Image (cartoon, rainbow, N blue to C red; front, side, top):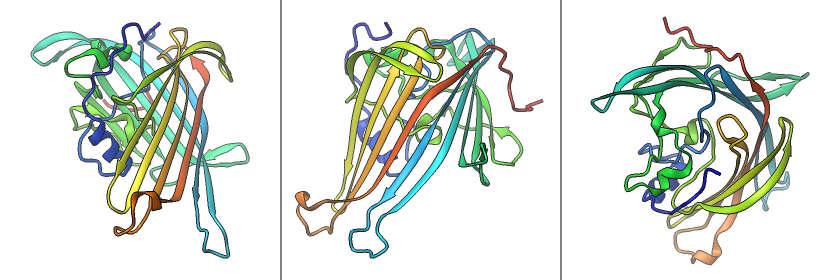
Length: 275
């Protein structure tokens, strides 16, 4: 499996947890979605629900519950050699397309900015399962040689950053030094049955008045192109006044995301016109 010799050595939990709060200060969250590279032209489509509940115990109207549908397709495209960090090395184009919206009459309707596409040229050596946790300097993100992005109805434009930060642009999966391998499980999903390893991670960030906890679970299999079979995330936000003690935190909101592979494609092509 992908997990032999796993050793927790990453040192970026604080920054990663800051990202849960939306303070996008540094690209340091583990990539968490692509664990192996299939043949060019292969893609995996994931689908699931994104739910948010805001708790209002003092309101006569009660809690507020919202739900969206999310589809994420990851495409493994052409290979080419490119210069990266002073060397000419094998690279691969990866394209991520995520759409979030409401399901209306069987059609996913996304509002402005509801669809994002990132096409990036990535060193093949950077996609190495969980081995980045064994490195002195973990591959905590997807390094980018060059790339493009398209947000909503805007035209495609160059991707200017040196890394693609999967969390939170594409997924709320957050893996870091707290990751543990929970064991082997067989899961049945829309795309089939897979023998998987499950990895769990809990990340917390807290200040005097708020606390956010991200619980991420990812099921990974060598038999699945790209590796990821399904994932589940829960994000709890708690609040208190600055003068209250820590045991007086009260839960204010909960976000849950449940995604699974629904289709494997063998004829994938880019959706971006970058000529």
